[in-house]
Length: 146
Image (cartoon, rainbow, N blue to C red):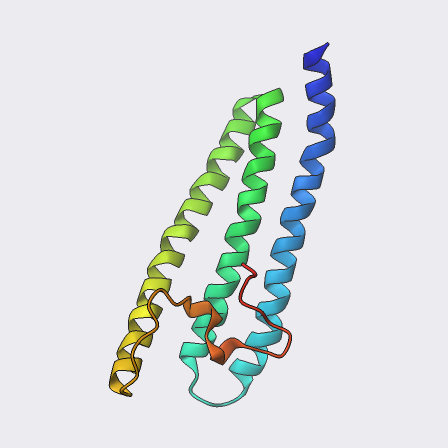
């Protein structure tokens, strides 16, 4: 009886979690498009700003993949097959690689910003999040989203 209830609950919850992943990835992609296209078409040399936009999108993708991984873990717990386990493993590997590269890029951007701040005579902001740089701010943006 409990097992049947868990299977039914899983069938209800997994699509909701996958919907959350879809929403998060869609928001991040739309934001990258809205900010990225003008930055790339501006004609100015703004590789730093474009890189910050892609880093921010990567954060959204990691958040979405985290939701997908959660849904797959829940789904696999009720009907584990080798196909399910393989899919779960693939998502975990992709998410791990994205996370590693994102962290590396954030560290590099932070170091660049610190060097720029030192070169301009300003003190660097300790622990500053490079993806919330003023270069990326729009009137509707805030720093507490992924």
